[in-house]
Image 1 (cartoon, rainbow, N blue to C red):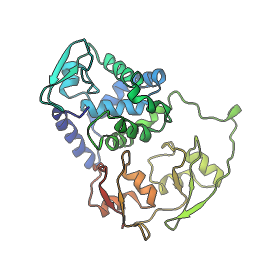
Image 2: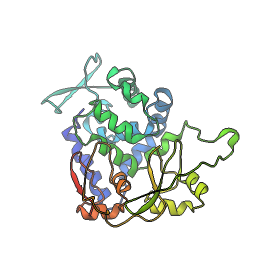
Image 3: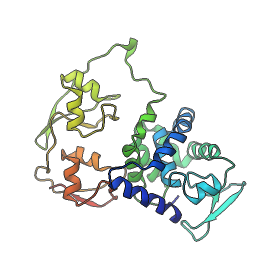
Image 4: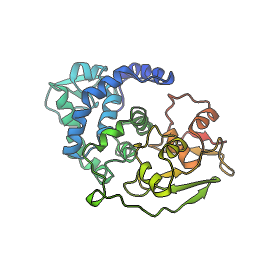
Length: 296
């Protein structure tokens, strides 16, 4: 479902605001209004609330686009076999048909069923429900949108607005009897930096306690906003400050679906701000799939 032309203006405004270091009020309002509904659908259909909210924000222009205003359609779902009311708008074609709902709740419900009941999207439900990066990439692979950078845009929205915090609403991550269990950590060295690899159900707090580090140092070195920033099995966690440029022989990186600038910086041990600077990008930039980024 390609994003409609009428929504581009709304998103452009958002891009400008983020470039100036501010969060968009309309986005914040949308999150406050619909986050609880997204969590309910996560618990019912096992779709990450972060993904639902990010898609709603992206597809509806934070509820400001025509489909959302006139049809309560927040996810750009087209008519297909739809027998209800319809609205027409230019998208992939000059006059595409979109579903109309009586209220927004119906749009959220239809979106969840659209993913959960179609074989086309079945592979998504084998993914970790906390791994928003994998879900964003999976949606793109399953053909939810024709925009080649759809996954990367979802990831940026989720990370900019910390939507991953809503994915924790129905998850318990304590050990048996609420006892903390120390785990063995194998240190590695690459790009002339020492790091460890995150384990299943890991966190910066657990890593800090296991290795005797201050959690605030791990947060700073890995350039995440707080200790609750999600970690997935296999993620790199640096135990020292990252570098301003990547060690030889690495010169460039080809962007893949679902990658953010932070994820790329973690892959090579380069500071995020330096990655932006080397490639002459501002904070609003979304890495484009197959684009080549400089690393030094």
